[in-house]
Amino acid sequence: MIKKSVLFFLLIILLLISCNQIKTSTELALPSPDAQNHLYFNLNNGEPWYLFYRKSEIIVDWSLLGVVLDDQTNFTEDLSYIKSESRSVTTGDTLILKDESFMVSPYNEMIVFLNKVENPEHHFKIIFRAYNNGFAFGYDFEKKDNDGMINIASEETEFNLYDKSTKWEAKTDGQNDAELHGSPKPEQFTIPLELVSQSGFSVTIIASKDNSFPGMTLVKQNPLKSGYKCQISFLPEVQNVIRPGIGTSYRVILVAQDNSINQDIK
Image 1 (cartoon, rainbow, N blue to C red):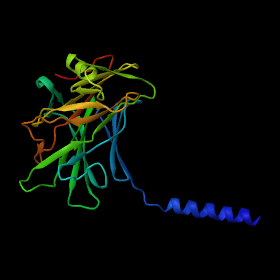
Image 2 (image 1 turned 135 degrees about the vertical axis):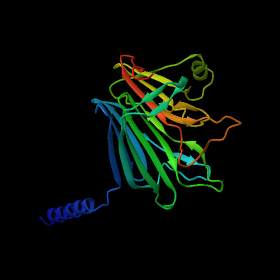
Image 3 (image 1 turned 30 degrees about the horizontal axis):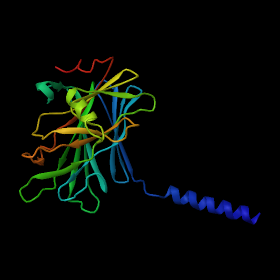
Image 4 (image 1 turned 90 degrees about the vertical axis):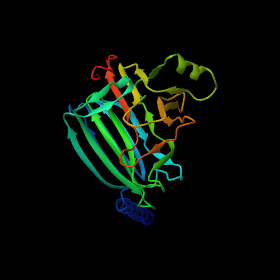
């Protein structure tokens, strides 16, 4: 009887401890104007993650966000949530993509303001946009070096396509095929990259051209999964320098069914 009482007492203590732990997760949601798409942001133990739904289907599973600067400031961890701001845009705004095509309004936008826990003066912003045919996000900073610019050393952004109920295939051109079969390196693709699922969804990953950008490739992290990690590829003559207030190019994910990926793109 005494042993049961001690066990019960220990269980009560553990329950009280768990109830009094500080929550370290912040989750925000951003719907598209037609409410068919939903983008979720989660700051979990200082790490920024996102997830994307279309109707009732998960398209992009929880994926890491962020970059590392050349001074080793790491904006993928040790982050603290400050605030978020949202707005709806109905007319007059564009996002330039490949071949001067563009995504047009309407869209809903959410800006998430973060900073480093140990260095609060190091500010980091993630700008999300939810369109009726996909979503986009970009990064901006307030931490500056001596000349007022930001130098990105590596990008850690992930695109983990949901593969619990479907499989994805990359539709590659000759150059990507050569990259894929020419060496034992992990699968690497230049963007834009289109992937098609067995369930009929088509996803195109692309970068906007509204800012100077040296180029981007996607590297498949695990041959058994559908996750693609975004990596910046540097040209020898180009530095990946970002001006605060302008930020990076947008990483854009277009989603459609029945291969109608460009129906909303002019």
